[in-house]
Image (cartoon, rainbow, N blue to C red; front, side):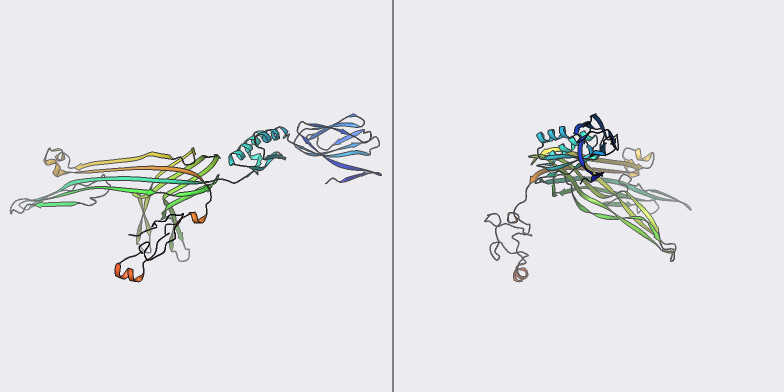
Length: 451
């Protein structure tokens, strides 16, 4: 709102005049002007070319005012000048490419308003405005996306681990008597490749029982183990275009994080923090156009491991101590950004880890004998192979009616007390004792059966 300015008995009204940087406007004055006052020449400038005509030129972004005076010092005209960026060229470009977007100048920056059909168009408008002002932080993007798409991500995380352990060793003990002298020979061969003694296995012992001869005891220790571990997770997540979604299936294990001591009782307690492990998934979808999705995926598979575990001793009351073993975490992580059509699949494979350990321990010299050397040595062989593969399939989805969806417990009917006690059933037979409502027009028997 402009405020009137009084000059004697003549009322001069202040007018608002918007200008662009580097633009000018011609002002016709009601009376002859002799002098002009510009509050901030860095923002605008005024030039009097004739007694009743002047030019006002925008120099920089900001606000100022211009006042014209006659020969007697009375005010002829007053203008509030708001100099903004010249947005006519940008408006024409946006009107041609993005008709629903409007741009206005705010101080040193600009603000974008309106609505577009997808996030890609909003991003393009923001990039055009950022080129105008020279920095993206000076652009306020208030564009509304009409009917933002939702993306469902179907993920298969499969991991297969194969472990093979072979251990064989001979413990030899000999005792010989020579008069009053006793000579003992003990040879115990450790297993070092696995990092622990014999995990499990069989042992065979033999010893001499003849009187007067040296006592010889031999123990053969052998174990061979082969195992396969299969891990499979199939999480399905749905997120709005441009937003992130996270899924984790696993657990948390405690980790000591220091001590807290009471200065009065001098009793210290262990502070505990928790570390997550398991299968986690994080993805951020952006629907570029109809059926095209820009997808950023990060998946991680972690498990507890005793390979690099550490043991922490905790002091108790008196001289007692307590040992806490903190396991390590074995992690497999994959992160990527790609463009993929709706319903297309992408595989992140080749995450293969193979570790082979083999150790031979024995008595120097004797363990190299061709045949008898087996009595003085042990062999330890460990082979670990792990392969991880991730399949990702995004879909552009829409909301559906509730009757078009089904639950895992649809059609499940618990058995009656008589069936449970007499026939050992935990569910009824479909189509006999319970009425099941069909879903989606299917007329057959279906549902979730517990064996």
